[in-house]
Every structure is written in structure tokens, then in C-alpha cells.
Image (cartoon, rainbow, N blue to C red):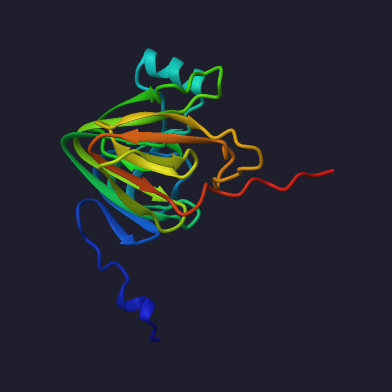
Length: 220
């Protein structure tokens, strides 16, 4: 039997997180890793999956209050684990003592060596709908899933991004909220067409090509 499929089978034998392809993450597991619940598509070896809480009382209440979208599971053992999310593009970011802010909806997996916390975008309070994201810092790798091929924008001037399209950005940037109130000016791709996240300073922002998975059609 011949197929191009067999030529590329199990060519990746790297330890830790690596890309099996641009839609799938492979983890050469020898210990543990944290990942989005429900993201496992296959595994081989002696591997166990368990629910992972927020890790601290403070983060527990922040998640309950903000609804930041990062339900986690802990994967432990030895073997190969494959993760994906609805055929979204997967990208890896290595932190070397620095920090990155990621929309919780876009987090696929991360090393347990990283510290993380939930932060609020300035000017977007809970009453007004809130913009809450997850900040990672330390040494380790984060796997980010993007809905569509993203663009990486270097920030050296005031930049504005649709709140549902912003995937990740430098934690050193100053963030805020800008509201566009002109009648009929539905300028964005996401649900908050009149609201954009503002970013200022020196750094980058990763913007996905979509506002995320489409909402289910109304019934009745």
C-alpha cells in the first residue's frame, strides 16, 4: 500500500510541544502539560487526563466572575499526545523570562513551568461587558490556536483591533477600549463592532482572520 500519508507518519519525535502540522499540536510527553479541555484528538502511551482547577483561590474567583474562556485539563504520563481545535491554525511561542497576554479562547496548551493570571483590559469594566485575558510569564512554551491565518502587527503607533480578533499581544503594551459611536458604522468583524481594543507602546499584537467560531443559528 502506498500513500503520501505514510511518508509523513510519525516523522516528528521531538520532546515537548511541537507542530505535527499547522493544524495539530504534538506533545512528546514525559511529565505533565496543561491543555484546553476537549482538545485531545489522539494519544499513544501511558497517558492520563484530569480536570485542572484554577490553581489558586484568586484565579478561581476571577474565572467565575469574568468568564475568561480557558477550561483546563492536566495531561500526565509518557507518550505522544495530539491536540487540535476545530482545525484552527496552531502557533508556538517560547517565553524566556518575558510575558505575553493571550485571549483565553485561543489558548491550546502551555507548559506548567509558566505562571499565569487573569487580567482586565483597562477601561473595560465588568459592568460594561469587560475584556479579560490571560497573562503568561516565565520560562516555557505556549501553544496558541488561531481561527484562520493570523497577521502579526508591530506596534510603534496607536493601534486598534476588533476585540474578538485580538489573539495575543505583548504584556508591556498599554491597552484600553475605544468606542465607535457613529450611526451605522459597523466597522468590525466581531460582535463588538462599536468597540475596539487600543494598544500603545512598543511590542506586537497577533490578529486572527476571523472573530472566532460562528454562533449557532437561532431556532424557532
